[in-house]
Image 1 (cartoon, one colour):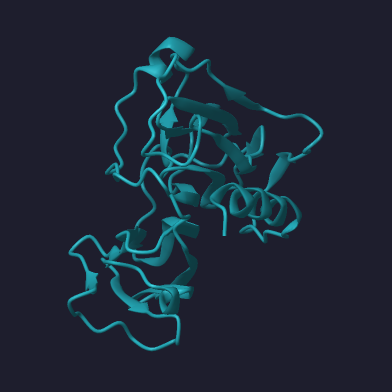
Image 2 (cartoon, helix red, strand yellow):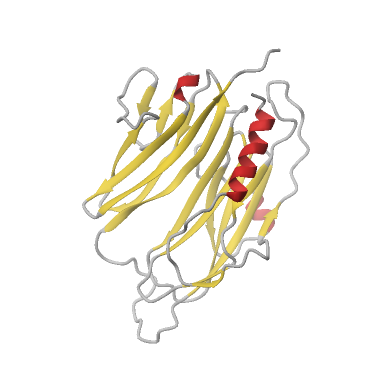
Length: 267
């Protein structure tokens, strides 16, 4: 199947899919206003090794423009995007000029996957009480493309809160904060499925394959020390959902990634 057709189908599916977020106290979560920004890319040269004429990157879920923190509550800001190659997402706290956002060094490991189409999801967790309004910016990148959207979080209104800017004490249930929703790539490629977790104490990570069986380390399947799953030389039979399960004494969280191997086009 043509990669361009796959991309169009996934973007359409992503735009109509219903995403259930975690409960937070919203000030304004209206989607009538698009708070995302796309920077102008540098001119790039075409490469015959790439299936796309140019890098592309689009939001599939834009973070809300405003959030209100409730007393003692943890806030989760969700950001999702899809693009060519393997997009990366990082969060910037505070105001930052556009020129500096363009120059940011990504804190994500970049993959050499010129034929991939990936939908990635990132969650920024605020597990302390804010003392003043603060801006959190989701910055997405792939190749020469950069897009971003900001959320302003307002502190709790209660005058009884004395301890601010200090992490909440005690253990925390795992939350998967960085994962891929969908990963398409050509058969024979290697696919790295991330699973980054926020937890206290540290969570144990287990992966389940497209047959809902626990992944066994082998020649083609490797669970890395980071908790990510590496699948080498993907084949048609690898297609399906792969589940990352994170567990500690406080509970568990899970996330699915749909892997779609695509048949190479004839030259």
